[in-house]
Length: 394
Image 1 (cartoon, rainbow, N blue to C red):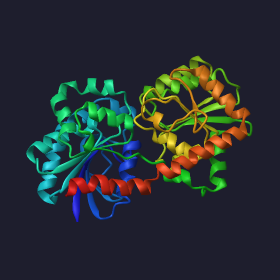
Image 2: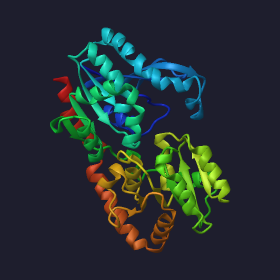
Image 3: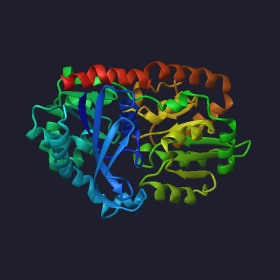
Image 4: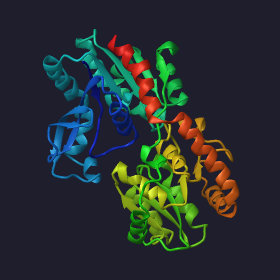
């Protein structure tokens, strides 16, 4: 059986976002390839080696006991990301001596491009695929990578194939010198749980009671990380313009949590902004199903997995068309489009949704159908096998 070694900065069971979910959904559906991974450990309670799904995980880096998200940004754990760039090639070299890998899969250029390039210097015969899933603004990423620019640039130019999850990121690959013939666009998919209607009503009722959702309450929801690019602050400001029974459910954690709580307090909205914290991906669907409107006024997106999952759940979506969102967010067709940093437009969109149930049904049905046809993990896994893995394994 052929073996692929994956480089990913983080992975299950903690610190999971769209990129990590994509790896798991794809590898769980690919049974004729043996996958390994080098990723950061962070938590000393996690084993250094562990099988999760179809991947043998090899964890490295500095650890503490059960660190919180905030701990990841403090010493010593905040040293892990730069250390990963140097430790990963060494770990991969040792693993390769034992397992004899046939190819590499590098998840996100700014996270793993440099260690992939270093490893490739010593093993140029081993082909690798680079996947671009970056959600941060491109200018910010490139500024951060300036100290390692030659190695970062080679991560693009030396890749056998570059897979992107949006045309927006494909354009970035071209600007970084990748030939168009070496770029393959394969989207991410929606959370499979959101396509199903098998969550027992009792479970949803228990969750409503836990969150104290009243009969007349309207829940706006976002299930993305608490980072500035997601525009959560704009939703909180919009909340001040809306009726008291409209509340905002934030499912996730991140470095902006304290700032968002402070803003909620300043605007007198503490009781209307509900911070749930990090939730396992298998449970996130329940929070969408008890909510009424998904609101994501993102300032930057590589694609927008959370938006696709919301559409799969038949939720009306309010969104910008930043980055990869422009490829499936269409005003009054699949979503309600707002400008970045526009609380007033968000408030108007919420009122329009609440006043026009027939229009909501038409738009959400259209969005749901689009996601079913175009953003299905079964189809995506097949495309990855045929268009990506075959290229690096031949």
